Amino acid sequence: MRVVDLERDMSDVIPTGTTRDSEYLFERMTRRTLELARGAGSRILDVASGFGQDLVPLAAGGTFAVGAEPSRRMMAFARMRRDEAGAPPLHLVRSWSDALPFRSHSFDAVLCKGALDHFDRPDRAIAEMARVTAPGGRVVLAIANFESLACRLARWTDDLAEGWLGRPVGRGRRHYDVPADHFTRYDLELMREQAGAHLELEVVEGISLGWGLPVWSRAVERLPESVAGRLLAAVGGLARWLPGYADVVILAGRPRSSTAR
Ligand SMILES: C[S@@+](CC[C@H](N)C(=O)[O-])C[C@H]1O[C@@H](n2cnc3c(N)ncnc32)[C@H](O)[C@@H]1O
Image (cartoon, rainbow, N blue to C red):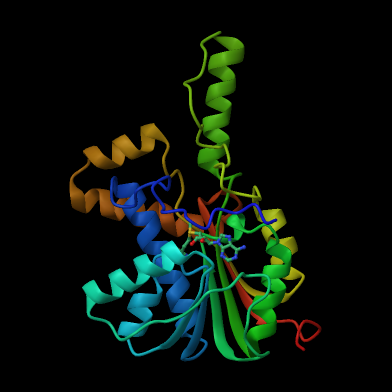
């Protein structure tokens, strides 16, 4: 039996619009992922499409977009979102990421955002994404980095408080702890290894630095809006070149010919 939660409803996922640094992270991650996918052509597969956050705008923009998603509940959310947006009907296919029910080379681009760490067989899933992508097409992965600067700083601060100052750290999940519904704890090295096995990597870049660190979130909240926006963009620009420290890493590349069937 597969131990995955098909009835999940995202209630345990960090809300995206609560703070400026969250808004920046989720907006940039989405924009860059879609930009890279759209740049490869007009037939796009969204693997683990969830509640249609990317599928609906793709369909609304005239792209032939297909969502592969195992959860019926997520699929229902996606259809509701489509109705609200008045977008064209969605092409949703109920399926697992490691056995995609599509012919080889069916899509110009395959994207998988914020989901690889939820898969029980991520390596097999990337192989499948590469298989269904046309030669010269692109697979785009957006993955949370659990060795980000923010995770490292939070861990050091906790170690310092606990080990040196004898202050117990707060209860509940810490910033650097992997949520219960994740199978894999990704860092840049592991992302490169898994993605590079099936893709000729062309893009490896970071999105956002310091996300969720209380001191950073609070500082950005307190600044005038335009100053905060410029600061987030400047720090985000740095993150792009420092993926090992970034909050999210985007990897994109062409399928290796050995993966094609
Ligand atoms: C955090 S959501 C991400 C959804 C979407 N990509 C986004 O950016 O909002 C993770 C999704 O992965 C799906 N999922 C979990 N295990 C899966 C698997 N083995 N194959 C395909 N999808 C899976 C879940 O149903 C859920 O919709």
